[in-house]
Length: 167
Image 1 (cartoon, helix red, strand yellow):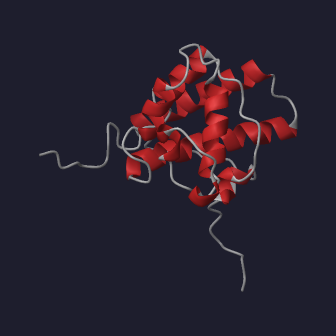
Image 2 (cartoon, rainbow, N blue to C red):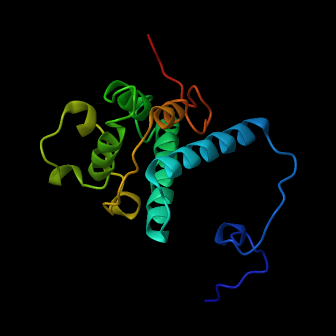
């Protein structure tokens, strides 16, 4: 089986090619700006310099993006991630890293192998070890970083792409 392709679809992600995006959606541009702002805030607050630190920060952001996607598409309950973070962490962000580190560890652990957990954490499904299996450091999160996360760095059909049947 050949893995060669005449379409260089993933080259920009590998840093091998620069692309220009035309006809940008304003919502996409705003989401990218928020993500960049969060990245800069976390990088500055954590003095990220080494390749290992950058890798851990990139994995953290990927995990956040997955959580937003999962909340918007029904993998998580509506509001489960964002309301949980907003309700169970301090406004100044001081305990947000610990909360997310624990949550990511939970999502990488099958339900039958988990310790006793509070209901709001136990309700998260086992997502898999490919994204949540590594116990990578979670960056310290500032008040501004927490606020940006809660503003929903990206918005996949927010307020919700799902419909509910309320009697």
